[in-house]
Image (cartoon, rainbow, N blue to C red; front, top):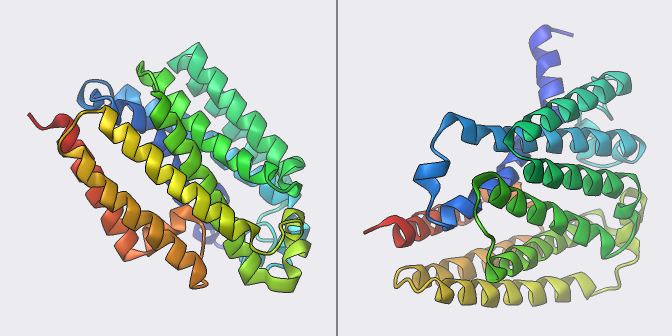
Length: 288
């Protein structure tokens, strides 16, 4: 195998597109108004890098444990491990190396940040090994990953997470995770249980109802969070959030992919709305 192709195979194991989720670390300083004083410096990349390496290590672990199921999946069978382009031994060694570097980097940030990183690794590993097989538990594990990133960001940059922000992120994470599971169940159909056991235990209509309920609740909690900020500009970001939530639901119900990262990167209206939201919130917080 050519060296460049081999490197691409190893890079795909890391799932760099999923590193977008780790930007959650910068939400506390961004929303707390300290972006320019705490984030725009070289050392601010360490927390992000640490979580990227840790998350990639857990992705590799998950792929190693799912290798047999992935070989029968219409899309995942093309990944580096199921296709045999990377050996299990090499992938396992890479995962351990990534985890070790992630812990070392986190230790240089702070003890509390290291604790959140270790908790993230523990939850993600437990999810990959067993918890993903249990209905609801799998969704809450994914949500915990977002919350731990948020709390880690607060610890890294010395920002307190407000109650409404915590609830908004929690409910949004449940909403997105449910949408992803619903998309998988609809796409795989009768063979869904062969790829993910938890999908077989969700009754018909349950995931739909949960997605609608948590989406509405996330919109309400975000609205209350914005109101507590007492900004005349931030309130106008609520319609953008509403559009984004409905656009994601439309993707799911139209049979398109439910992965949050891929949805944001591949769906142009969703990407534009996400960018507009960031710009509007930034203007509301940082404009004089």
